[in-house]
Length: 103
Image 1 (cartoon, one colour):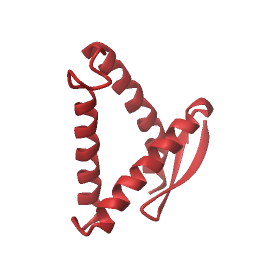
Image 2 (image 1 turned 120 degrees about the horizontal axis):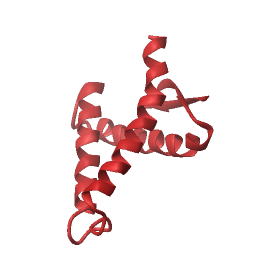
Image 3 (image 1 turned 90 degrees about the vertical axis):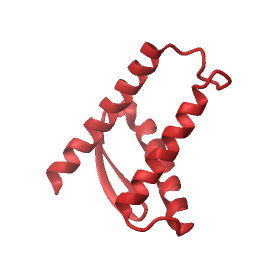
Image 4 (image 1 turned 180 degrees about the horizontal axis):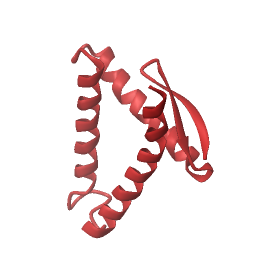
């Protein structure tokens, strides 16, 4: 396990992950930071928890549209998608669990 320091909306987070997952976790944190910062800067939503929910809903909508019959993920089976989502959740869980201990 390695530790990464990332910043999301100016808030520092120390995350843990496997060495081979570092790049993906940094990209995910950067992507989330951009989404949340854009929502905050547009003054559409107040409060970090609401901004996080709006960002998550936006990303879920993008994901689902990519999976639509015309989208780039249309040929992926539900089981393949579930496997990918489970792997992503595992990476996020392993990164966030040490964070919970720090607080």
